[in-house]
Amino acid sequence: MPILIELAYPYPINYLRYPITRRKQAGGLGIPKIRALNAAASMNLGWRMILEPIKSHAWGGIVEQRRRIEEHTGMALEDGRTTRCWLGRWVEPSPLLIFATQYAPLTELEKRAHEYWDEQGGRRWEAFLDFLPHPVLIRIASFELLEEGVDGNFYWIGDNDGKFKLQAAISIIQDKPAISHE
Image (cartoon, rainbow, N blue to C red; front, side, top):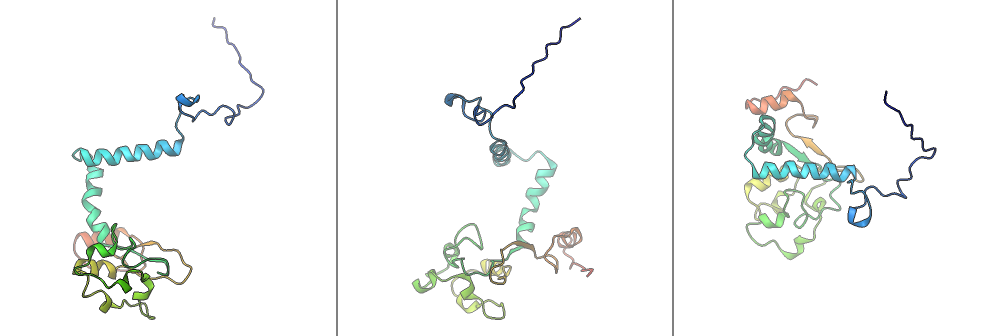
């Protein structure tokens, strides 16, 4: 018959006194913090997607649909007062200036995004037409300004209320106009 030994320690372990997440070289146990571990695992998946051919049907499907998702996603720029129009990264991952077909005047470079919208919420297209190619202009058209003090968010262009709906996505895939059931 096995002998059971009861180990009882009447006090909780003070993890601040025994830093288990400290590296082993620094005297800890080397157990990573859960957030760092999760981020590292996500980076590993991303790295594998870059290096290896896509073997998973789920990942493959997501990657294949990325272009459609990006084409039908807009971003509200908050009120546009803090976003630098030409030097900020609001249209694409690179500053808008990178896409200019000719030099923008120096006076334009420091302007904020809200300065390129009129009072009714429309764009001042004359400021962009001579400087940007058509695909970038289309991307700019997907953005809207919000009321002052409101945080910016992504929204789905494929439906009237800005929320992603499967029916709207199916219509996009089948190249049919979405039917809104409001």
